[in-house]
Length: 108
Image (tube, rainbow, N blue to C red; front, side, top):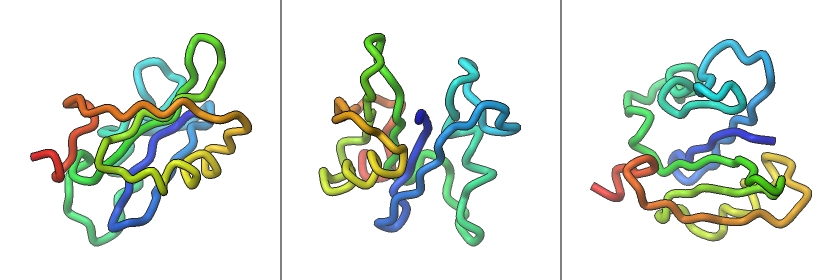
């Protein structure tokens, strides 16, 4: 499954995309957009913006292999949890992405 995730206070918050989703959908229409989804999934008392916590996404490359794009501040111990949350049946490619797209408070 494709989708996005955050690590909020040490806990994985994973959101697998389902066709027909009514909010948070990326322009491609095949996954979620972190910024658009955050208002719908943000913890109740949280006042932080979508880009505060470390985050990433699960997608597939052109050969159909799962790829986890992940903020470099997220430890390797979360990779297995992410793979399980997105029901990945194949070993994913893990790409630590330090670009502006995945920066969080730990990078600033």
